[in-house]
Length: 130
Image 1 (spheres, helix red, strand yellow):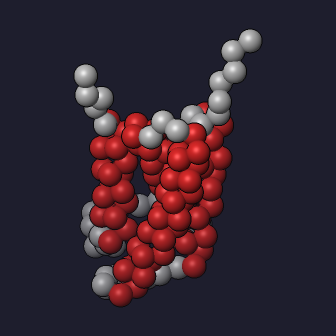
Image 2: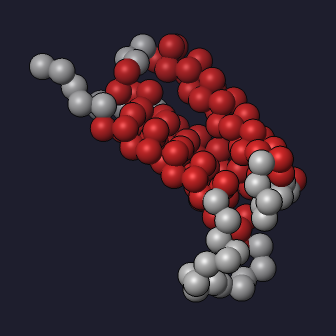
């Protein structure tokens, strides 16, 4: 029986969602806005933390060896941090109303590492039966 890659689909969908939200401008819309200082940093942190959790779950669907999983999880971390850098550069270069911010990159990176910590605690620990 073939295992359904539900977490892989969720991970890819989440990254596409982040990309669209990062490159689309909401400044000329009738959407309600919230004026809380630095709330966007919390959003960046949360989005990248969730991306990391979904990425780890996706990798668990495809790899079973602990040593391989550890190496691949660190590749995931590098890819997500790099993706955050690329998105910030794209915001500065291809959008008119968005700009790159160093603190957004910092929030993205912290989100990735906190997401990795949570994933390790919840999904990557070896369960020992007593």
